[in-house]
Length: 542
Ligand code: AHR
Image (cartoon, rainbow, N blue to C red; front, side):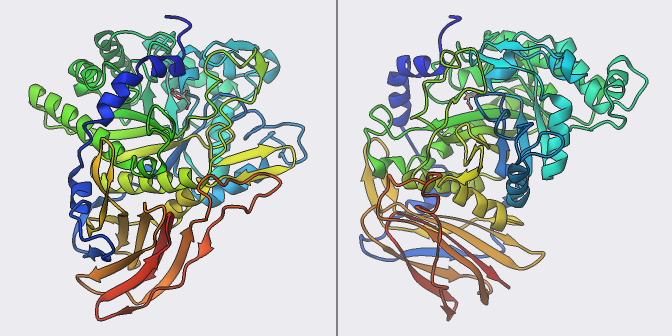
Protein backbone atom coordinates (compact mmCIF):
# COMPACT_ATOMS: atom_id res chain seq x y z
CA UNK A 1 0.00 0.00 0.00
CA UNK A 2 2.86 2.31 0.87
CA UNK A 3 4.06 2.76 -2.69
CA UNK A 4 0.75 3.18 -4.48
CA UNK A 5 0.55 6.54 -6.24
CA UNK A 6 -2.61 8.53 -6.99
CA UNK A 7 -2.06 7.95 -10.71
CA UNK A 8 -1.56 4.23 -10.26
CA UNK A 9 -4.67 4.08 -8.16
CA UNK A 10 -6.60 6.07 -10.76
CA UNK A 11 -5.58 3.64 -13.48
CA UNK A 12 -6.67 0.68 -11.39
CA UNK A 13 -9.94 2.38 -10.66
CA UNK A 14 -10.63 3.63 -14.18
CA UNK A 15 -13.45 1.11 -14.60
CA UNK A 16 -15.17 2.76 -11.66
CA UNK A 17 -14.48 6.18 -13.11
CA UNK A 18 -16.21 5.33 -16.39
CA UNK A 19 -19.12 3.76 -14.59
CA UNK A 20 -19.58 7.02 -12.70
CA UNK A 21 -19.41 9.03 -15.89
CA UNK A 22 -22.07 6.88 -17.51
CA UNK A 23 -24.85 7.99 -15.21
CA UNK A 24 -24.33 11.72 -15.47
CA UNK A 25 -27.46 13.70 -14.74
CA UNK A 26 -27.86 17.40 -14.60
CA UNK A 27 -28.11 19.42 -11.45
CA UNK A 28 -31.03 21.79 -10.99
CA UNK A 29 -29.22 24.64 -12.71
CA UNK A 30 -27.80 22.65 -15.61
CA UNK A 31 -31.08 20.93 -16.20
CA UNK A 32 -32.57 24.32 -16.97
CA UNK A 33 -29.80 24.72 -19.49
CA UNK A 34 -30.67 21.46 -21.19
CA UNK A 35 -34.11 22.55 -22.36
CA UNK A 36 -33.08 22.50 -25.94
CA UNK A 37 -34.11 24.55 -28.92
CA UNK A 38 -33.67 23.53 -32.55
CA UNK A 39 -30.16 23.27 -33.93
CA UNK A 40 -29.12 26.60 -35.43
CA UNK A 41 -31.66 28.55 -33.34
CA UNK A 42 -30.30 31.23 -31.03
CA UNK A 43 -29.64 30.32 -27.43
CA UNK A 44 -32.16 32.28 -25.37
CA UNK A 45 -30.94 33.49 -22.03
CA UNK A 46 -33.26 34.95 -19.38
CA UNK A 47 -31.79 37.20 -16.72
CA UNK A 48 -33.65 38.81 -13.84
CA UNK A 49 -31.61 40.54 -11.18
CA UNK A 50 -34.29 39.61 -8.61
CA UNK A 51 -33.81 35.90 -9.32
CA UNK A 52 -30.62 34.80 -7.61
CA UNK A 53 -29.10 31.55 -6.36
CA UNK A 54 -27.12 32.96 -3.46
CA UNK A 55 -24.84 35.72 -2.33
CA UNK A 56 -21.42 35.04 -3.85
CA UNK A 57 -18.73 34.08 -1.38
CA UNK A 58 -15.58 35.25 -3.13
CA UNK A 59 -13.67 32.37 -1.55
CA UNK A 60 -15.15 30.41 -4.45
CA UNK A 61 -12.16 31.71 -6.42
CA UNK A 62 -9.41 30.60 -4.05
CA UNK A 63 -6.24 28.76 -5.00
CA UNK A 64 -3.66 26.39 -3.57
CA UNK A 65 0.10 26.22 -2.93
CA UNK A 66 1.68 22.95 -1.89
CA UNK A 67 5.23 22.05 -0.98
CA UNK A 68 5.47 20.19 -4.26
CA UNK A 69 7.91 20.62 -7.14
CA UNK A 70 8.61 24.30 -7.77
CA UNK A 71 5.41 25.75 -6.29
CA UNK A 72 7.07 27.22 -3.20
CA UNK A 73 10.81 27.06 -3.94
CA UNK A 74 11.48 28.84 -7.29
CA UNK A 75 7.76 29.66 -7.48
CA UNK A 76 6.97 32.14 -4.76
CA UNK A 77 10.23 31.91 -2.77
CA UNK A 78 13.62 32.24 -4.42
CA UNK A 79 16.23 33.92 -2.24
CA UNK A 80 19.20 35.11 -4.26
CA UNK A 81 17.14 35.81 -7.37
CA UNK A 82 17.30 39.36 -8.70
CA UNK A 83 13.50 39.16 -8.89
CA UNK A 84 13.13 38.55 -5.14
CA UNK A 85 12.77 40.91 -2.19
CA UNK A 86 14.69 40.87 1.09
CA UNK A 87 12.48 38.00 2.36
CA UNK A 88 13.30 35.89 -0.68
CA UNK A 89 9.75 36.34 -2.05
CA UNK A 90 9.48 36.65 -5.84
CA UNK A 91 8.30 40.23 -6.38
CA UNK A 92 6.88 39.51 -9.84
CA UNK A 93 4.75 36.67 -8.42
CA UNK A 94 3.59 38.82 -5.52
CA UNK A 95 2.54 41.56 -7.97
CA UNK A 96 0.73 39.05 -10.19
CA UNK A 97 -1.19 37.34 -7.37
CA UNK A 98 -1.97 40.67 -5.74
CA UNK A 99 -3.33 42.05 -8.98
CA UNK A 100 -5.37 38.88 -9.58
CA UNK A 101 -6.96 39.37 -6.15
CA UNK A 102 -6.97 35.72 -5.05
CA UNK A 103 -9.09 35.77 -1.86
CA UNK A 104 -7.85 32.62 -0.09
CA UNK A 105 -4.92 30.22 -0.59
CA UNK A 106 -4.66 26.68 0.78
CA UNK A 107 -1.26 25.58 2.16
CA UNK A 108 0.96 23.51 2.69
CA UNK A 109 -0.72 20.51 0.96
CA UNK A 110 -2.06 18.34 -0.54
CA UNK A 111 -0.43 14.96 -0.13
CA UNK A 112 2.60 16.72 1.34
CA UNK A 113 0.76 17.78 4.47
CA UNK A 114 0.11 14.22 5.62
CA UNK A 115 3.78 13.69 6.45
CA UNK A 116 4.68 17.26 7.42
CA UNK A 117 5.87 18.30 10.88
CA UNK A 118 5.08 22.02 11.06
CA UNK A 119 7.70 22.43 13.80
CA UNK A 120 10.40 21.73 11.16
CA UNK A 121 9.36 24.90 9.31
CA UNK A 122 9.47 27.46 12.14
CA UNK A 123 12.27 29.06 14.14
CA UNK A 124 15.78 30.08 13.06
CA UNK A 125 16.27 29.09 9.42
CA UNK A 126 19.77 27.73 9.94
CA UNK A 127 18.41 25.23 12.49
CA UNK A 128 15.63 23.89 10.29
CA UNK A 129 16.15 20.32 9.06
CA UNK A 130 16.41 19.14 5.46
CA UNK A 131 13.66 16.57 5.28
CA UNK A 132 12.77 13.90 2.75
CA UNK A 133 9.17 14.53 1.80
CA UNK A 134 7.86 11.05 1.12
CA UNK A 135 4.70 12.14 -0.68
CA UNK A 136 6.67 13.57 -3.60
CA UNK A 137 10.10 12.01 -2.96
CA UNK A 138 11.66 15.45 -2.73
CA UNK A 139 13.86 17.36 -0.31
CA UNK A 140 12.19 20.07 1.73
CA UNK A 141 14.79 22.45 3.13
CA UNK A 142 12.12 23.97 5.39
CA UNK A 143 13.41 27.45 4.64
CA UNK A 144 9.81 28.37 3.92
CA UNK A 145 7.29 27.45 6.63
CA UNK A 146 4.23 28.73 8.45
CA UNK A 147 5.56 32.20 9.32
CA UNK A 148 6.92 32.77 5.82
CA UNK A 149 3.56 31.73 4.37
CA UNK A 150 1.69 34.14 6.64
CA UNK A 151 4.03 36.98 5.66
CA UNK A 152 3.60 36.11 1.98
CA UNK A 153 -0.22 36.04 2.35
CA UNK A 154 -0.05 39.52 3.83
CA UNK A 155 2.11 40.72 0.95
CA UNK A 156 -0.32 39.45 -1.72
CA UNK A 157 -3.45 40.40 0.25
CA UNK A 158 -4.92 36.93 0.64
CA UNK A 159 -6.29 34.82 3.49
CA UNK A 160 -4.54 31.57 4.49
CA UNK A 161 -6.47 28.30 4.40
CA UNK A 162 -4.30 26.05 6.53
CA UNK A 163 -4.02 22.31 5.98
CA UNK A 164 -3.31 20.02 8.93
CA UNK A 165 -1.40 16.77 9.07
CA UNK A 166 -3.91 14.12 10.13
CA UNK A 167 -1.79 11.40 8.50
CA UNK A 168 1.36 11.03 10.64
CA UNK A 169 0.39 14.04 12.76
CA UNK A 170 -1.48 13.85 16.04
CA UNK A 171 -4.63 15.76 16.91
CA UNK A 172 -2.66 17.31 19.75
CA UNK A 173 -0.13 18.81 17.31
CA UNK A 174 -2.96 20.02 15.09
CA UNK A 175 -4.37 21.96 18.03
CA UNK A 176 -0.82 23.12 18.88
CA UNK A 177 -0.53 24.72 15.43
CA UNK A 178 -3.82 26.55 16.01
CA UNK A 179 -2.40 27.76 19.33
CA UNK A 180 0.85 28.81 17.62
CA UNK A 181 -1.09 30.78 15.00
CA UNK A 182 -4.07 32.16 16.89
CA UNK A 183 -3.37 32.65 20.62
CA UNK A 184 -1.96 36.03 21.68
CA UNK A 185 0.56 35.04 24.35
CA UNK A 186 1.18 33.27 27.63
CA UNK A 187 0.91 29.66 26.45
CA UNK A 188 3.54 27.19 25.32
CA UNK A 189 2.87 27.44 21.58
CA UNK A 190 1.90 31.12 21.39
CA UNK A 191 5.09 32.01 23.25
CA UNK A 192 7.09 29.90 20.82
CA UNK A 193 5.66 31.99 17.96
CA UNK A 194 6.63 35.16 19.84
CA UNK A 195 10.11 33.73 20.38
CA UNK A 196 10.20 33.27 16.60
CA UNK A 197 9.69 37.01 16.20
CA UNK A 198 5.93 37.22 15.58
CA UNK A 199 4.24 39.17 18.38
CA UNK A 200 0.69 39.28 17.05
CA UNK A 201 -1.39 36.16 16.36
CA UNK A 202 -2.50 35.51 12.79
CA UNK A 203 -6.09 34.56 13.63
CA UNK A 204 -6.31 31.98 10.88
CA UNK A 205 -9.98 31.17 10.56
CA UNK A 206 -10.29 28.30 8.06
CA UNK A 207 -8.58 24.91 8.41
CA UNK A 208 -8.60 21.66 6.44
CA UNK A 209 -8.64 18.57 8.68
CA UNK A 210 -6.16 16.52 6.66
CA UNK A 211 -6.01 15.76 2.95
CA UNK A 212 -7.51 12.97 0.81
CA UNK A 213 -7.48 10.53 3.71
CA UNK A 214 -9.60 8.09 1.65
CA UNK A 215 -6.72 7.52 -0.79
CA UNK A 216 -4.39 4.51 -0.46
CA UNK A 217 -1.65 6.85 -1.76
CA UNK A 218 -2.07 9.12 1.27
CA UNK A 219 0.45 8.91 4.10
CA UNK A 220 -1.55 7.77 7.12
CA UNK A 221 -4.49 6.55 4.99
CA UNK A 222 -7.15 5.04 7.22
CA UNK A 223 -10.75 3.89 7.16
CA UNK A 224 -13.58 6.40 7.04
CA UNK A 225 -14.60 5.69 10.62
CA UNK A 226 -11.03 6.01 11.91
CA UNK A 227 -10.59 9.28 10.04
CA UNK A 228 -14.00 10.59 11.12
CA UNK A 229 -13.07 10.00 14.76
CA UNK A 230 -9.64 11.59 14.30
CA UNK A 231 -11.21 14.63 12.61
CA UNK A 232 -13.72 14.83 15.45
CA UNK A 233 -10.98 14.88 18.07
CA UNK A 234 -8.84 17.36 16.14
CA UNK A 235 -11.87 19.64 15.79
CA UNK A 236 -12.71 19.31 19.48
CA UNK A 237 -9.19 20.24 20.59
CA UNK A 238 -8.83 23.01 18.01
CA UNK A 239 -12.11 24.61 19.03
CA UNK A 240 -11.03 24.54 22.69
CA UNK A 241 -8.10 26.69 21.55
CA UNK A 242 -10.17 28.93 19.27
CA UNK A 243 -13.96 28.55 19.07
CA UNK A 244 -14.22 30.84 16.03
CA UNK A 245 -12.66 28.35 13.59
CA UNK A 246 -14.28 27.10 10.41
CA UNK A 247 -13.33 23.46 9.89
CA UNK A 248 -13.40 21.37 6.73
CA UNK A 249 -13.46 17.56 6.89
CA UNK A 250 -11.94 15.44 4.11
CA UNK A 251 -14.53 14.15 1.69
CA UNK A 252 -13.89 11.73 -1.16
CA UNK A 253 -10.93 12.39 -3.46
CA UNK A 254 -13.28 12.11 -6.41
CA UNK A 255 -16.02 10.02 -8.03
CA UNK A 256 -13.38 7.51 -9.24
CA UNK A 257 -12.91 6.25 -5.68
CA UNK A 258 -14.58 2.90 -4.95
CA UNK A 259 -15.62 4.37 -1.60
CA UNK A 260 -17.10 7.53 -3.21
CA UNK A 261 -20.00 8.92 -1.11
CA UNK A 262 -19.86 5.99 1.32
CA UNK A 263 -16.62 7.49 2.67
CA UNK A 264 -18.32 10.88 3.01
CA UNK A 265 -21.29 9.39 4.84
CA UNK A 266 -19.19 7.37 7.30
CA UNK A 267 -16.86 10.31 8.00
CA UNK A 268 -19.76 12.64 8.66
CA UNK A 269 -21.51 10.12 10.91
CA UNK A 270 -18.48 10.57 13.21
CA UNK A 271 -17.76 14.28 12.93
CA UNK A 272 -20.83 16.09 11.53
CA UNK A 273 -21.44 18.02 14.74
CA UNK A 274 -17.81 19.15 14.93
CA UNK A 275 -17.19 20.51 11.43
CA UNK A 276 -18.59 23.21 9.14
CA UNK A 277 -17.84 21.85 5.70
CA UNK A 278 -16.82 18.83 3.65
CA UNK A 279 -14.17 18.86 0.93
CA UNK A 280 -14.38 17.69 -2.67
CA UNK A 281 -11.52 17.25 -5.16
CA UNK A 282 -11.59 16.72 -8.91
CA UNK A 283 -9.11 16.78 -11.80
CA UNK A 284 -10.27 16.48 -15.41
CA UNK A 285 -8.53 14.75 -18.30
CA UNK A 286 -8.93 14.70 -22.06
CA UNK A 287 -7.52 11.25 -22.62
CA UNK A 288 -8.49 7.77 -23.71
CA UNK A 289 -9.89 6.76 -20.30
CA UNK A 290 -11.99 9.79 -19.42
CA UNK A 291 -13.24 11.26 -22.70
CA UNK A 292 -11.90 8.95 -25.40
CA UNK A 293 -9.82 11.97 -26.48
CA UNK A 294 -13.07 13.63 -27.55
CA UNK A 295 -12.78 17.39 -27.04
CA UNK A 296 -16.54 17.90 -27.47
CA UNK A 297 -17.01 15.67 -24.44
CA UNK A 298 -14.13 17.25 -22.56
CA UNK A 299 -15.67 20.74 -22.69
CA UNK A 300 -18.90 19.29 -21.26
CA UNK A 301 -17.18 17.77 -18.21
CA UNK A 302 -18.06 20.70 -15.98
CA UNK A 303 -21.53 19.19 -15.86
CA UNK A 304 -20.08 16.15 -14.16
CA UNK A 305 -18.57 18.47 -11.54
CA UNK A 306 -22.15 19.60 -10.88
CA UNK A 307 -23.25 16.00 -10.53
CA UNK A 308 -20.47 15.43 -7.99
CA UNK A 309 -21.58 18.51 -6.04
CA UNK A 310 -25.23 17.41 -6.06
CA UNK A 311 -24.33 13.91 -4.85
CA UNK A 312 -22.09 15.23 -2.08
CA UNK A 313 -24.73 17.72 -0.95
CA UNK A 314 -27.22 14.83 -0.80
CA UNK A 315 -24.92 12.85 1.53
CA UNK A 316 -24.33 15.86 3.80
CA UNK A 317 -28.05 16.50 4.05
CA UNK A 318 -28.81 12.84 4.67
CA UNK A 319 -26.42 12.79 7.64
CA UNK A 320 -27.94 16.06 8.82
CA UNK A 321 -31.29 14.25 8.85
CA UNK A 322 -29.86 11.26 10.74
CA UNK A 323 -28.41 13.58 13.34
CA UNK A 324 -31.53 15.75 13.56
CA UNK A 325 -29.06 18.60 13.30
CA UNK A 326 -30.12 22.18 12.62
CA UNK A 327 -26.74 22.76 10.94
CA UNK A 328 -26.27 22.54 7.16
CA UNK A 329 -22.74 21.92 5.94
CA UNK A 330 -21.20 23.92 3.11
CA UNK A 331 -18.80 22.42 0.59
CA UNK A 332 -15.16 23.26 0.03
CA UNK A 333 -14.11 22.26 -3.51
CA UNK A 334 -10.55 22.73 -2.38
CA UNK A 335 -8.79 21.09 -5.35
CA UNK A 336 -10.07 21.37 -8.92
CA UNK A 337 -8.43 21.76 -12.31
CA UNK A 338 -7.47 20.03 -15.53
CA UNK A 339 -4.57 17.67 -14.89
CA UNK A 340 -3.57 14.62 -16.89
CA UNK A 341 -0.34 15.20 -18.84
CA UNK A 342 2.33 15.94 -16.22
CA UNK A 343 1.40 13.01 -14.01
CA UNK A 344 4.74 11.28 -13.62
CA UNK A 345 5.62 13.09 -10.41
CA UNK A 346 3.47 11.00 -8.13
CA UNK A 347 5.59 9.75 -5.24
CA UNK A 348 8.45 8.55 -7.47
CA UNK A 349 10.02 11.22 -9.60
CA UNK A 350 11.10 13.86 -7.13
CA UNK A 351 14.47 12.03 -7.13
CA UNK A 352 15.18 13.32 -3.63
CA UNK A 353 15.91 16.74 -5.11
CA UNK A 354 15.07 20.23 -3.94
CA UNK A 355 12.40 21.90 -6.09
CA UNK A 356 12.23 19.25 -8.84
CA UNK A 357 10.17 19.99 -11.93
CA UNK A 358 6.99 18.12 -11.03
CA UNK A 359 3.44 18.39 -12.38
CA UNK A 360 4.37 21.29 -14.68
CA UNK A 361 1.27 20.95 -16.83
CA UNK A 362 1.15 23.23 -19.88
CA UNK A 363 -2.41 24.31 -20.56
CA UNK A 364 -3.99 24.76 -23.99
CA UNK A 365 -7.10 26.46 -25.36
CA UNK A 366 -9.49 23.57 -24.70
CA UNK A 367 -8.28 23.35 -21.09
CA UNK A 368 -9.12 27.01 -20.63
CA UNK A 369 -12.59 26.46 -22.12
CA UNK A 370 -13.26 23.71 -19.59
CA UNK A 371 -11.85 25.81 -16.76
CA UNK A 372 -14.31 28.54 -17.80
CA UNK A 373 -17.11 25.95 -17.69
CA UNK A 374 -15.96 24.75 -14.28
CA UNK A 375 -16.09 28.32 -12.98
CA UNK A 376 -19.66 28.54 -14.34
CA UNK A 377 -20.52 25.32 -12.50
CA UNK A 378 -19.06 26.58 -9.23
CA UNK A 379 -21.04 29.80 -9.60
CA UNK A 380 -24.28 27.89 -10.23
CA UNK A 381 -23.70 25.96 -7.01
CA UNK A 382 -22.73 28.95 -4.89
CA UNK A 383 -25.58 28.25 -2.49
CA UNK A 384 -23.64 25.24 -1.12
CA UNK A 385 -20.07 25.57 -2.40
CA UNK A 386 -18.69 28.47 -0.39
CA UNK A 387 -15.00 27.90 -1.01
CA UNK A 388 -13.03 26.41 -3.90
CA UNK A 389 -9.35 26.29 -4.82
CA UNK A 390 -7.97 26.21 -8.32
CA UNK A 391 -5.18 23.65 -7.85
CA UNK A 392 -2.64 24.99 -7.90
CA UNK A 393 -1.32 28.58 -8.29
CA UNK A 394 2.33 28.62 -9.38
CA UNK A 395 4.39 26.10 -11.42
CA UNK A 396 2.52 22.98 -10.27
CA UNK A 397 -0.67 22.37 -12.35
CA UNK A 398 -0.95 26.12 -12.32
CA UNK A 399 -2.04 29.18 -14.29
CA UNK A 400 1.40 30.77 -13.72
CA UNK A 401 4.87 29.38 -14.44
CA UNK A 402 8.10 31.04 -13.35
CA UNK A 403 11.63 30.85 -14.68
CA UNK A 404 14.73 32.75 -13.63
CA UNK A 405 13.73 35.72 -15.82
CA UNK A 406 10.04 36.17 -15.16
CA UNK A 407 6.66 34.52 -15.33
CA UNK A 408 4.28 33.13 -17.92
CA UNK A 409 0.48 33.15 -17.96
CA UNK A 410 -0.99 29.89 -19.19
CA UNK A 411 -4.37 29.75 -20.94
CA UNK A 412 -6.30 28.83 -17.77
CA UNK A 413 -5.09 32.05 -16.16
CA UNK A 414 -7.58 34.06 -18.23
CA UNK A 415 -10.99 32.57 -17.29
CA UNK A 416 -9.82 32.46 -13.68
CA UNK A 417 -8.78 36.11 -13.78
CA UNK A 418 -12.14 37.12 -15.29
CA UNK A 419 -14.04 35.47 -12.45
CA UNK A 420 -11.82 37.24 -9.93
CA UNK A 421 -12.22 40.55 -11.71
CA UNK A 422 -15.92 40.51 -12.61
CA UNK A 423 -17.95 38.12 -10.44
CA UNK A 424 -19.35 40.09 -7.50
CA UNK A 425 -22.54 40.38 -5.47
CA UNK A 426 -25.14 37.65 -5.98
CA UNK A 427 -25.07 34.71 -8.36
CA UNK A 428 -27.89 34.99 -10.87
CA UNK A 429 -30.28 32.12 -11.44
CA UNK A 430 -30.09 32.36 -15.22
CA UNK A 431 -32.39 30.33 -17.45
CA UNK A 432 -31.00 29.16 -20.77
CA UNK A 433 -32.67 27.56 -23.76
CA UNK A 434 -29.83 26.29 -25.89
CA UNK A 435 -29.48 23.92 -28.81
CA UNK A 436 -27.88 20.71 -27.60
CA UNK A 437 -25.55 17.99 -28.86
CA UNK A 438 -25.17 14.35 -27.99
CA UNK A 439 -22.23 13.34 -25.79
CA UNK A 440 -21.48 9.69 -25.17
CA UNK A 441 -22.63 8.59 -21.70
CA UNK A 442 -23.84 12.11 -20.94
CA UNK A 443 -26.86 12.47 -23.23
CA UNK A 444 -27.87 15.87 -24.61
CA UNK A 445 -25.55 18.68 -23.56
CA UNK A 446 -26.32 22.37 -24.22
CA UNK A 447 -23.91 24.11 -26.56
CA UNK A 448 -24.20 27.33 -24.62
CA UNK A 449 -23.41 27.36 -20.89
CA UNK A 450 -24.04 30.59 -18.97
CA UNK A 451 -23.43 31.83 -15.43
CA UNK A 452 -23.44 35.33 -14.06
CA UNK A 453 -23.58 37.71 -11.14
CA UNK A 454 -25.38 40.91 -10.23
CA UNK A 455 -23.92 43.32 -7.71
CA UNK A 456 -26.68 45.41 -6.15
CA UNK A 457 -24.08 47.74 -4.65
CA UNK A 458 -22.77 49.09 -7.93
CA UNK A 459 -25.40 47.79 -10.36
CA UNK A 460 -22.89 45.75 -12.39
CA UNK A 461 -24.01 42.58 -14.15
CA UNK A 462 -21.44 40.07 -15.40
CA UNK A 463 -22.07 37.02 -17.57
CA UNK A 464 -19.65 34.24 -18.48
CA UNK A 465 -20.56 32.17 -21.53
CA UNK A 466 -19.00 28.97 -22.83
CA UNK A 467 -19.75 28.02 -26.42
CA UNK A 468 -19.06 24.27 -26.47
CA UNK A 469 -19.61 24.05 -30.20
CA UNK A 470 -16.13 23.36 -31.54
CA UNK A 471 -17.06 24.11 -35.17
CA UNK A 472 -19.83 26.72 -35.27
CA UNK A 473 -20.64 30.12 -33.84
CA UNK A 474 -23.85 30.46 -31.83
CA UNK A 475 -26.16 33.42 -31.58
CA UNK A 476 -27.12 34.33 -28.03
CA UNK A 477 -30.10 36.48 -27.15
CA UNK A 478 -30.20 37.78 -23.60
CA UNK A 479 -33.69 38.73 -22.46
CA UNK A 480 -33.53 41.13 -19.54
CA UNK A 481 -36.58 40.36 -17.45
CA UNK A 482 -36.29 43.40 -15.21
CA UNK A 483 -34.22 46.44 -16.09
CA UNK A 484 -31.88 46.08 -19.06
CA UNK A 485 -28.37 47.35 -18.29
CA UNK A 486 -27.11 50.37 -20.15
CA UNK A 487 -23.36 50.39 -20.65
CA UNK A 488 -20.97 47.62 -21.58
CA UNK A 489 -17.91 47.97 -19.34
CA UNK A 490 -15.96 44.88 -20.37
CA UNK A 491 -16.36 42.58 -23.35
CA UNK A 492 -13.69 39.93 -23.94
CA UNK A 493 -13.51 36.56 -25.61
CA UNK A 494 -11.08 33.67 -25.33
CA UNK A 495 -10.98 31.62 -28.52
CA UNK A 496 -8.71 30.45 -31.34
CA UNK A 497 -8.40 28.10 -34.29
CA UNK A 498 -6.34 25.47 -32.55
CA UNK A 499 -7.78 23.79 -29.45
CA UNK A 500 -4.32 22.45 -28.64
CA UNK A 501 -2.50 25.81 -28.83
CA UNK A 502 -0.63 26.93 -25.70
CA UNK A 503 1.64 29.72 -24.47
CA UNK A 504 5.38 29.39 -23.87
CA UNK A 505 8.08 31.73 -22.57
CA UNK A 506 9.14 32.13 -26.21
CA UNK A 507 5.57 32.80 -27.46
CA UNK A 508 3.65 34.05 -24.41
CA UNK A 509 0.85 35.72 -26.42
CA UNK A 510 -0.13 32.77 -28.57
CA UNK A 511 -3.49 32.21 -26.85
CA UNK A 512 -4.74 35.31 -25.07
CA UNK A 513 -8.13 37.02 -24.75
CA UNK A 514 -9.33 39.32 -27.49
CA UNK A 515 -11.74 42.23 -27.42
CA UNK A 516 -15.27 41.14 -28.18
CA UNK A 517 -17.44 43.70 -30.01
CA UNK A 518 -19.53 45.41 -27.35
CA UNK A 519 -23.07 44.07 -27.83
CA UNK A 520 -25.92 46.57 -28.04
CA UNK A 521 -29.20 46.32 -26.16
CA UNK A 522 -32.60 47.40 -27.42
CA UNK A 523 -36.14 46.58 -26.43
CA UNK A 524 -34.89 44.68 -23.38
CA UNK A 525 -32.77 42.34 -25.53
CA UNK A 526 -29.06 41.95 -26.21
CA UNK A 527 -28.10 39.82 -29.20
CA UNK A 528 -24.63 38.76 -30.26
CA UNK A 529 -22.76 35.90 -31.86
CA UNK A 530 -20.32 33.76 -29.91
CA UNK A 531 -17.40 32.38 -31.90
CA UNK A 532 -16.99 28.61 -32.08
CA UNK A 533 -14.96 27.10 -29.16
CA UNK A 534 -15.03 30.19 -27.02
CA UNK A 535 -15.44 31.52 -23.49
CA UNK A 536 -16.76 35.08 -23.29
CA UNK A 537 -17.10 37.54 -20.42
CA UNK A 538 -19.29 40.61 -20.64
CA UNK A 539 -19.85 43.12 -17.86
CA UNK A 540 -22.48 45.85 -17.93
CA UNK A 541 -22.87 48.89 -15.71
CA UNK A 542 -26.27 49.97 -14.40
O1 AHR B 1 -2.61 18.92 -6.29
C1 AHR B 1 -1.79 17.81 -6.47
C2 AHR B 1 -2.21 16.64 -5.59
O2 AHR B 1 -3.45 16.15 -6.01
C3 AHR B 1 -2.42 16.98 -4.13
O3 AHR B 1 -1.24 16.90 -3.41
C4 AHR B 1 -3.38 15.92 -3.68
O4 AHR B 1 -4.21 16.36 -2.65
C5 AHR B 1 -4.12 15.55 -4.93
O5 AHR B 1 -4.11 14.17 -5.11
